[in-house]
Length: 57
Image 1 (cartoon, one colour):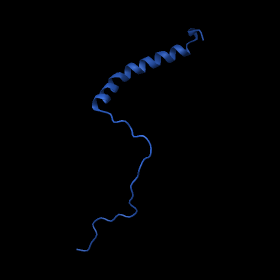
Image 2: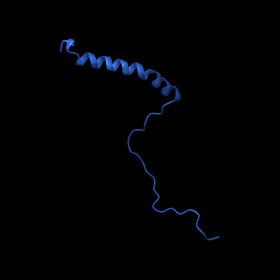
Image 3: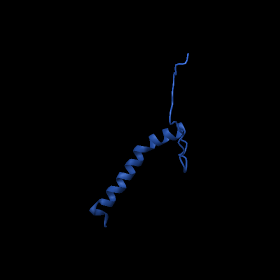
């Protein structure tokens, strides 16, 4: 019974310094998914208005 089943060498822990990523609830994920098409449309419209030669800029 002296056979080794698992052997680890050079095992270490890794620590991240800085702010932790915000915890997202399932409600946040669903809200973001529902709002994404509308936000994408708003951003596309604003970008098109800025690029358009009719914008007066």
